[in-house]
Length: 224
Image 1 (cartoon, rainbow, N blue to C red):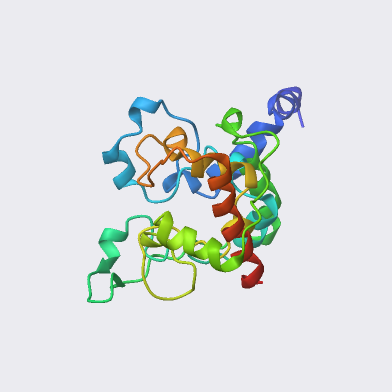
Image 2 (image 1 turned 90 degrees about the vertical axis):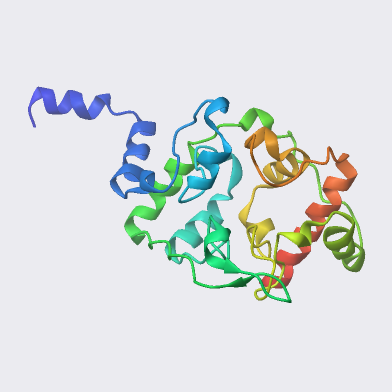
């Protein structure tokens, strides 16, 4: 290798190297990998997305979940990123008219570098509570009632592997998928993370956030 080649290798920072793998695998074709101004995060852009934004993946996902999911991707959103395209109405609620396109499996020898690249995308880290609040102690039955009825989360999110609703991401493994600090911050104020997020922000008190976190923790235990 000549001097120019050596200097080129030295000039590539670890973050750049980790970013390159996402470009090589074509992740930018479906995901926003770099932060964009808040003013550009419009409803039109939200509706046109092919996949979720990943510029805050490092603040959002648990690395161990990412490694497992990238090796064997399964739909997180049962009707994809744009459920209005893949669902139809029925008397019992929305039903899938077509399955979302599968996410490609990441080669096993690239998973580590992909996870590192995603971990480096930590936009919003200043929004995370430190330390993350602990889930509230609440009985399983009351936690479910609070989630489904009192807070209305069951209108968009499934907590079982079948049936409606289909408009939001499944939450059977929400606790094992998402970092606790992110869960707390997003539940408290989704629009801090995305100004056009369809999930309502109710300005919940920490104890109410903790109750919802506890339900997700219990669900993930049951899903094992």
